[in-house]
Length: 118
Figure 1: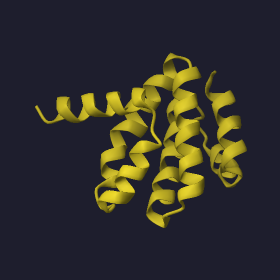
Figure 2 (figure 1 turned 90 degrees about the vertical axis):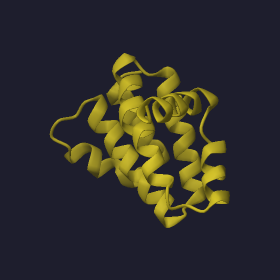
Figure 3 (figure 1 turned 180 degrees about the horizontal axis):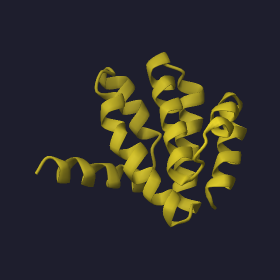
Figure 4 (figure 1 turned 60 degrees about the vertical axis):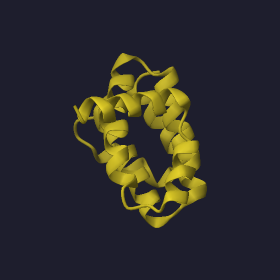
């Protein structure tokens, strides 16, 4: 999957994001994942669990099926931002979020956290 296919799949889950994706002048893997990450951040803040959990599942699918650029974008944009997004969530909500993230992405998250803390 390339970034154009990822953008289409994201739009299927979150139709409201289409304008943002289309209006982005520099469309590439990083810009698509950054836009989706920002959208997920807003879902977390608004406690929109249903759409959030579907979006987290889609992020996992993009990571699993994406090309190298998409995988790198997910790791460096979404995973890197995840701790910042969930810092102010209560423990129950934070656990719910992380249970909807694949084990592969959780492992990458853990590596980043421990590596960053060194």
